[in-house]
Amino acid sequence: MTIPPPSDLPNGTRDLWDALATDLCIIRRGSPTVTDRELLANVVTAQHRLRQIGKQLEDDGPVTHGSTGQTIAHPLLAVEAQLRREIEERLLTLRLIGCGHPGEPFGGELTPVVA
Image: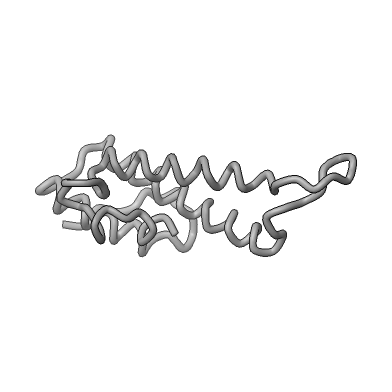
């Protein structure tokens, strides 16, 4: 069973949607709930933003300069960390990752999904 993606998903996210939606259908043994689909859309959108932030950090580097010229951590590092936590929480809720859950990839490592 395939779940059609929402029309407002960011461009370039269809492959991720299809892969996660397929896993979700297997785990749910059929059709996921409306809440499942909304959480999945949130994961895919957050992953898209995470990639955009990663590209920006790659261009800018991990540090920048504050208002008085001091070296500070790039503000996007905090946003990146928060997005990673949000993605992990939603994937755990959907049971797409996590110790002992049917969708556990590669011994529970998160990097294949959120890297």
